[in-house]
Length: 101
Image 1 (cartoon, rainbow, N blue to C red):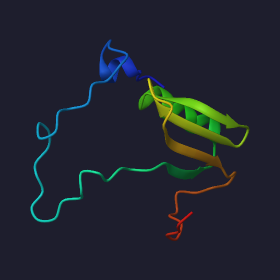
Image 2: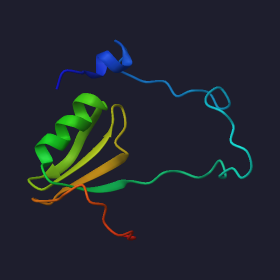
Image 3: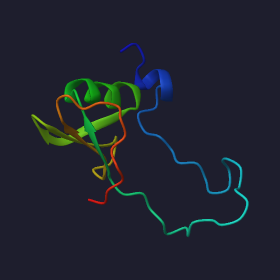
Image 4: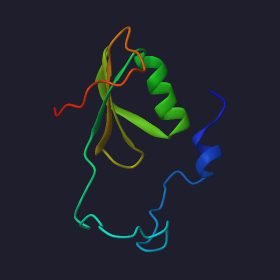
Protein backbone atom coordinates (compact mmCIF):
# COMPACT_ATOMS: atom_id res chain seq x y z
CA UNK A 1 0.00 0.00 0.00
CA UNK A 2 1.25 3.49 -0.79
CA UNK A 3 0.47 5.25 2.52
CA UNK A 4 2.68 4.80 5.56
CA UNK A 5 2.19 5.71 9.21
CA UNK A 6 4.75 8.49 8.71
CA UNK A 7 2.52 9.94 5.98
CA UNK A 8 -0.40 9.99 8.41
CA UNK A 9 1.23 10.80 11.75
CA UNK A 10 4.51 12.46 10.75
CA UNK A 11 7.87 11.35 12.05
CA UNK A 12 6.79 10.93 15.67
CA UNK A 13 6.52 7.24 16.54
CA UNK A 14 4.26 7.94 19.51
CA UNK A 15 0.92 9.66 19.27
CA UNK A 16 -0.21 12.06 21.96
CA UNK A 17 -3.88 12.02 22.96
CA UNK A 18 -5.79 15.27 22.69
CA UNK A 19 -6.63 16.96 25.98
CA UNK A 20 -10.25 16.55 27.03
CA UNK A 21 -12.39 19.36 25.68
CA UNK A 22 -9.93 20.37 22.94
CA UNK A 23 -11.37 18.30 20.11
CA UNK A 24 -14.61 17.89 18.20
CA UNK A 25 -17.93 19.47 18.85
CA UNK A 26 -19.73 18.72 22.08
CA UNK A 27 -22.89 16.73 21.28
CA UNK A 28 -26.24 18.01 22.41
CA UNK A 29 -28.07 15.98 25.01
CA UNK A 30 -26.80 12.75 26.55
CA UNK A 31 -23.10 12.10 27.07
CA UNK A 32 -21.58 8.75 27.93
CA UNK A 33 -19.97 8.61 31.36
CA UNK A 34 -16.24 9.47 31.26
CA UNK A 35 -15.45 6.00 32.63
CA UNK A 36 -16.88 4.39 29.47
CA UNK A 37 -14.20 2.57 27.45
CA UNK A 38 -14.27 0.80 24.09
CA UNK A 39 -13.46 -2.90 24.22
CA UNK A 40 -11.78 -5.09 21.62
CA UNK A 41 -13.50 -5.13 18.22
CA UNK A 42 -13.78 -8.60 16.62
CA UNK A 43 -14.04 -8.76 12.83
CA UNK A 44 -14.32 -11.57 10.31
CA UNK A 45 -12.19 -11.00 7.22
CA UNK A 46 -11.84 -12.93 3.96
CA UNK A 47 -8.07 -12.42 3.62
CA UNK A 48 -6.12 -12.17 6.88
CA UNK A 49 -2.79 -11.15 5.32
CA UNK A 50 -4.40 -8.34 3.31
CA UNK A 51 -6.31 -7.10 6.36
CA UNK A 52 -3.20 -7.13 8.56
CA UNK A 53 -1.36 -5.11 5.91
CA UNK A 54 -4.17 -2.52 5.91
CA UNK A 55 -4.37 -2.17 9.69
CA UNK A 56 -0.58 -1.98 10.07
CA UNK A 57 0.37 0.14 7.07
CA UNK A 58 -2.63 2.47 6.79
CA UNK A 59 -3.93 2.73 10.37
CA UNK A 60 -0.58 2.27 12.13
CA UNK A 61 -1.51 -0.63 14.39
CA UNK A 62 0.80 -3.56 15.12
CA UNK A 63 0.17 -7.28 15.45
CA UNK A 64 0.74 -8.50 19.02
CA UNK A 65 -0.56 -12.09 18.74
CA UNK A 66 -2.10 -14.50 16.31
CA UNK A 67 -1.79 -17.59 14.19
CA UNK A 68 -2.69 -18.61 10.63
CA UNK A 69 -6.35 -17.60 10.99
CA UNK A 70 -6.30 -14.95 13.76
CA UNK A 71 -4.51 -11.66 14.41
CA UNK A 72 -4.74 -9.41 17.47
CA UNK A 73 -3.70 -5.80 16.89
CA UNK A 74 -2.82 -2.97 19.27
CA UNK A 75 -1.54 0.58 19.05
CA UNK A 76 2.22 1.15 19.08
CA UNK A 77 3.46 1.50 22.63
CA UNK A 78 0.56 -0.50 24.06
CA UNK A 79 -0.26 -4.18 24.46
CA UNK A 80 -3.98 -3.52 24.92
CA UNK A 81 -5.81 -5.29 22.08
CA UNK A 82 -7.91 -3.01 19.89
CA UNK A 83 -8.89 -5.26 16.99
CA UNK A 84 -9.12 -9.03 16.64
CA UNK A 85 -9.25 -10.29 13.05
CA UNK A 86 -10.63 -13.78 12.34
CA UNK A 87 -10.09 -15.14 8.85
CA UNK A 88 -13.18 -16.69 7.29
CA UNK A 89 -12.38 -17.57 3.66
CA UNK A 90 -15.21 -16.44 1.45
CA UNK A 91 -16.43 -13.80 3.90
CA UNK A 92 -18.26 -10.99 2.13
CA UNK A 93 -19.05 -7.40 2.94
CA UNK A 94 -22.66 -8.30 3.69
CA UNK A 95 -23.28 -7.30 7.32
CA UNK A 96 -23.88 -10.15 9.72
CA UNK A 97 -26.84 -10.02 12.08
CA UNK A 98 -26.05 -8.32 15.42
CA UNK A 99 -24.56 -10.63 18.02
CA UNK A 100 -22.89 -10.50 21.41
CA UNK A 101 -19.76 -12.61 21.83
